[in-house]
Length: 549
Image (tube, rainbow, N blue to C red; front, side):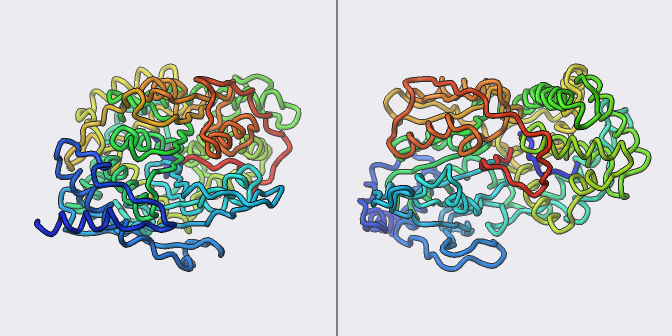
């Protein structure tokens, strides 16, 4: 799946595990019995996961003041959890994952009456390559107050991300070089240029990460999650994943079903092993075309405000005119067609930004490029984080599964798709092309599924017109996890809808997290209100938690 921020796991072993597993975890909850850990048919990684979880349970997390770099105010606290780089060698190199936590308030936000603590709720926003260290901040949002009264809100940076053994594949200054081109129908010479860049990028990842590169993948993210659960002293996991977070959450549910208490899948990736990841990216590109039309149709509806055309086709013409002008004269010397594409791709993810993006186009065509530059130009101060996120994204997706290794396959599939879905197809292909030339060994995708009765009820949230994770992914996930309930926001396409603008969705999410109650099988919610065409505050943050695929 495409990341949104772009440039264009001895003799003494047994006694240690036994001691750790029988120690009383924080909060006085009973620890899982050793037999509760799945054997995975004796695989070394399973044994390493069991050992690492036992050690983490014994050590706990020493929470304290958050580093200034996290920009997290008190009473949010931060700590670290050690996990093996390689779970097949659990006594070898250890890496530290950064963790943030805000303890449950213990009081109903309205009545102020005591509320029983239900454990820690871990959140992952997806990517791969995104951090959720900010997650405890949602406690101040009305949509999350009741949940924050009962749960410790826990965020973390997965392996490779930010301060958690960070990955890098190239110099950040080069990663955000601007302006760049972004041809919708690339020439043969441009394709050769991008092949060369993909090979160079893949080589950079291998050179900078060395032998460690092979250990950054979804299976290890799942193992890390179980170690985090143990470190927090939680017998059972409460987890909410968005976008890519739903995928490794589903893999967790497959490998550790007895460890699951509550699990929310928000904007679900299609977990079919045959889809991971090449075909999912093709499906994503096709879906973005429909979502791009949704944006243009909305802009056309507000032609009197923006003057960009009174039909979706006319708005497309205005956008194409801007692309053409930027290819000859980048705005402010910073925004070329590549930067334009990156900014307007965000409109395919979140309708929160529609008014801002429409205004930027309108103003540019009236001779004022400032709004477009503000919204689309690379930010040097973010270059390091963006390069890191892209490196983790690439490593995880390339390591997770086999990819076509001949460009002819990519060329054939994307050329065909671009004929009917030109908006995002080739940019998505370039994003993932390093996987064709990847040197690290590939994993085989897990066959996500659970036996009937093996899992407690789980909850899937999905917007019907989501482009980043097309709706059929939510349907496929529900088929594979018996007892899962699916809540659909009809005729809407925002990516990541839990805790957002739809009160109906939020009621289902809150009821599930607080009581375990789900719809019998499926529930439908009417779409949230369309954006206000004159809401132009570029600093306004979405009310939902943004997903990161």
